[in-house]
Length: 201
Image (cartoon, rainbow, N blue to C red; front, side):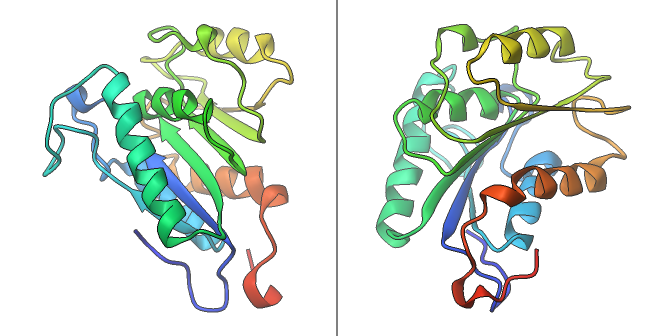
């Protein structure tokens, strides 16, 4: 868990899910880290965690099912320690799938999905979460199909705010600082008022 600078705190906590555990995904992933940093710079408390079987976490990979339970455990903890905060969720790649699955049963202030693997997991069977939703997809992604993401986003009602980042691959190499700015701009209108109204996003 990371905290914003004193005087910039907002009553919201962002929980962030990492990419596929069987392909090297951990909470230290660079895209996860830049998402965490961008939200903290906006005044949010942030929480990153390793899914089961990753790092020091017990258990083994469960193809999104057990990982959704892991996320629920973390959000329940956040509710206890930050009971007055809005809950925000974010995820990158496999983590985007897990966070959308969990969003079906959570009241959220904002959802962020980066490179959601809609052509690899059953996104079509999931109902649209009732919260503002930012989806970010690189146009040079060689893991997730940009066409599949666009078709899926357009099928939702209302459609999420889909932003296509130009010249960006799956891991946003050399584009991480641009991603940081895109994320901050993409959620700025959803930010709860800062404590003391002193935040400078």
